[in-house]
Length: 293
Length: 175
Image 1 (cartoon, chains in turn green, red):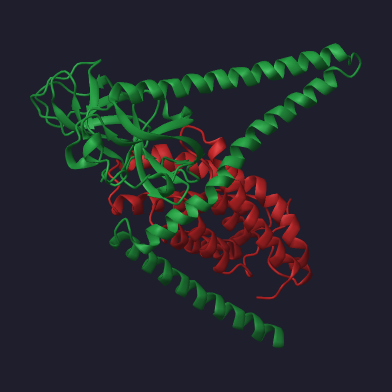
Image 2 (image 1 turned 90 degrees about the horizontal axis):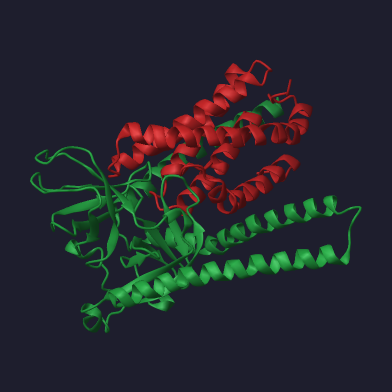
């Protein structure tokens, strides 16, 4: 009897909690949808993402560590009978060679970023990618520079070959970059050859689409797509990618153009956060990091 | 809430699930689809403890899931609570002492959550084709979630079943 009463009581509590949590969830959802980018829930989300970013970095280290352990175990079993100093030295050399190759590739990537910085006369700061989105529905990366380094929401982020995304949230020492391939991304863009304007959007399949083009605009496969700077969301004149496919013929108002990003966003390791480009460098010296909106 | 062995296991499992979601899930993404370990864990607990699982764990883990991403806060929390409740009720009613029923419930619940979350994002302004959302996210992600659930289910069925069976609770036995 007493047990039954207890079970009924706890069932009632669970139902009350169920209704309460559903109501709280809906209230949070409504508040989040209505508040701006600077609202308290966005702030909490940004802070939590920043707090978990070092854990993501540990994830990358764990991944490479696991690979090393695997190799180690393999070597250990293979060398069980013929273990010698020479083999140890060889292993050490191989490790050093791998390390040197890692440094060489990193230097190459950083050189690419520097070249691009010089070519566009970019005022900005370099950052390392320290984590990737923990959920499947958004394509974002975390970088190791935050508001303490002058990084602010809205700033354009470039990879070694072109624009890769935009800062959407910052903490003191980390930031979240929404990649161009995210379906929620949108960058005002133009075709470099014809100056036809449109909007580059990401998609769930990971492709970039150039949309809202004039029906009369000429588009050729191979055309370079650059940011137009309209709306102020991205800096002007930065390369996004090249046209690889045109879905419909000229004159069709609903045609979509597939754009291939100039760099592989999946392999991003270092990025450049753009504070200002070329001529607007002087104008934005005073509000570095805040003019990307 | 009483501090019992089962509750401690559930709490520790929740922490491990969060760590796995942050550390491992992004590294094992396939074509932009990655598992939602938190969802799989919540559903497994709901199925393994159908009469004891309350809405606290799904709400907290759903909220964590929302805060880890850039989507609407409260969305996953809402869906986790609903899915957990539906899964536990479905299991309590449909259990036939085989592994088939919990797995069916797991598949249905993960698919429902991924689809509804996509619909929620679209309702809030995500400009994507519903078919794309189904093909490129909901379907692969729910399959991935099920794989994680398949790994977690026997483990937690074994860990949590002992105590529950002693109290004649409705708990699955692996056959």
